[in-house]
Length: 390
Ligand code: PLP
Image 1 (cartoon, rainbow, N blue to C red):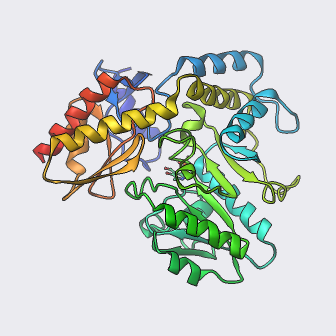
Image 2: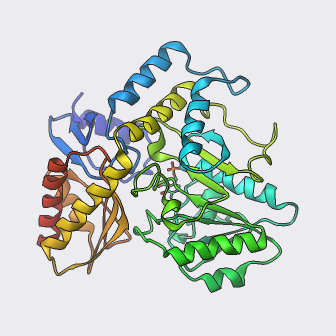
């Protein structure tokens, strides 16, 4: 089937909730995609962050194939090895705790919300989140998302969601009352424009949570694993969350998400309180375990640091007047422009380079951690060229 048939089929049979481009992708490998007409694209946005290892990483493909041939789904009534392998890898690189598996970042945040309320006890139900945050589209995670443009038509939101300015510790201290159960924060805001909080701010949130016995939830759906040059982005701030949510890149392309909780928060879910039929199914969990192993084997945490520095240097050396700064860490970067950045997306795509624009004026780049230095340099040249032409 050609592009037209696939695009028309999509429009006829799928709901219109995504702003899609009229391109039908037929194959992907590493940092490259190919469409039905044979056009090649360099993916500098890694499938909205889900392609951290690049597309169809051989170790992940092999793990999926081997597991699929053995056992795909038997239900969470039983135990199986790949769930243990993935949880062992996550906790070995983060903190001592236990996991709940699901399929999407939104579900992981739903779990965190339930955990925080359960752990806080009767009557404590409020969760604080921050301006420009994004936590997902299900009703609970949407309620945690402060950006009201996403709420339109879906109200009322869940009671007890308190939105505060990002970066203002005094506002947080003033908002905490006897009904507060937790705080949810992205250690680097993604959809909101690649906004990096200060170390003092993140440590201040930790201290407030300790003082008031609140759950500090770090939403690492965009930032982990390894994306920002640490296994998990909270590690940049010298703090440890009580609860951490994961998704996107954890499955190497298949749906793997998790809510990770440390002692004191990991025991509140007992049989009957929560569940997800296919969560952590053998194939997805095997893919996740292979992702974490590949990050170790290929030293991809360091690769994020090095390649992020490569992009930042190229942007700095280009000395473009309308670039007012580069935000982010590792391979999660936002190039901030003086004016509207929307045109950069289409212009780069026309030249076979995929990036993203968010918050109106931020060109977002998050290439696969495995991208080659040369292909990255070639892609960044195109981005610089198109920003210059704006
Ligand atoms: N949390 C953050 C920080 C995100 O960026 C996203 C999606 O972009 C989500 C949660 C929701 O993840 P999902 O789309 O897998 O539900």
